[in-house]
Amino acid sequence: MAHVASRLSTALRSLGSLLPRRRTSDRSRVVRPWREDALRSYPTVGITPARMLALLQAADAGAPQAMYELFGEMLQRWPRLAAVEATRRLALTGLDWEVVADERVPAALGDDARRAAEFCHEALSRVDAFRGALGFLANAIGHGVAVAELVWEDGRLVDITPTPFARLAADPNEPWRVRVRTEEEQTWGVPVDAQPFKWITHCPQPTPGRPFDGGLLRASSLLFLAQNLSFKDWLIYSQIAGMPVRVGRFEPGTPEEDKRKLLEMLKALGTDAVAILAKNMELQFVEAARGGDKPYQPIQDYCNTEITILWLGQHLTTDIRNTGSRAAAEIHDRVREDLLVDDMADEAETIRRDVLRPMTLARFGADTPTPRFRRALIQSVDTKVLADTLAVAVEKLGLRPSRRWAHRALGIPEPSAGEPTLGGGTLS
Image 1: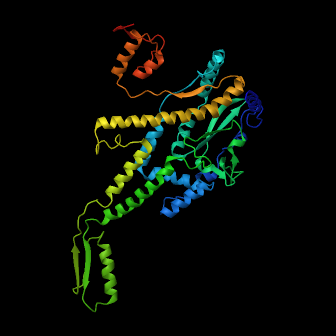
Image 2 (image 1 turned 120 degrees about the vertical axis):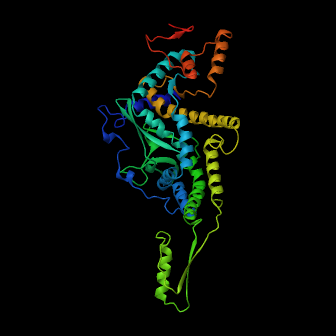
Image 3 (image 1 turned 90 degrees about the vertical axis):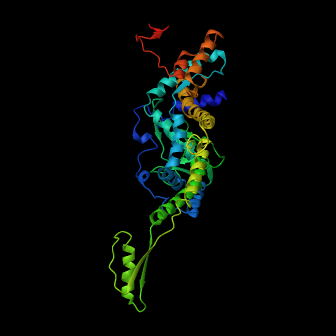
């Protein structure tokens, strides 16, 4: 294993075009601006079950471009889906991040592990695009996979470029290999795994052999179809519900031209509300039955509830006004925290494998332990209860929690150097 890691370290140091000795140029990047990124086919226009099935089948065959465009339009056209997707994603990306030493390494390697963690944390803090890249990678929760390009300069990570989802593909002969389409390789693109230390590939819930099959947006597609079709019918129904039916009567023997004019006049009454009739014609308004929104509201409510459960594991935190109590909603909110913990673990594994590992190899070699990526999760607790618990833990049990963690957990910022502080009830 050490021999393999040593070879990887050597390869990283001599990647040539991937790690140029001079300043990185656009030619060393794989993901460069491409006109096709701006093209749109609007797959949700006139969407039907058969057409949606065809899009999903094309993705399974290695061409997910239309499916990912469908996902983007789903988020634009269904507010509830956009809300729960953002809630799930932002719950992860809104947390502070840090790079920490691997605590499981032998004591003899502890100093090396800490130095590697400090170096990686400082280096990533200098990469302006890192925070945006983390936000982009979080889209893999819905899309199933997200890929970003690592840009190196003299062995240092200098940039991270998100790869548009429409660029992703898979070779039909090797469907498990994710590829990135480029202007030079427009059909199947370049395989991601053929360029070590060049890509971040985030697959939170991978399906073996099917890289485009694991996202929640794919599971949401059927609910979107039901919601979208019923919503269109609801809009049409809203235009005519409660409006009187316009009936025109004519005497036997009325010329066809007069009949045609009568029909056109009845159509215009919907907006003009005025008419001129011959004496041999009669106009009548028949009041429509007022049945309300009952034919369509239940299916809309059903779709909104089910999509919330799919993304957040529960629905009382979003529908508390309609069902359940506040206490039940707080219990359900713990389910959402369980999902967040799982998302954090998936993200940490990807960043450690695809970012921290090559950075450690390039700087320290194969013998230095790779640090770990971690999000700072503060559980939803009463700060007064937490303060009382800390007082007992420190004063009576002799525990020594991190001062930085305590400040963060209590929501109290740490003072800057020379700033007056409160201590013992007075300014100090």
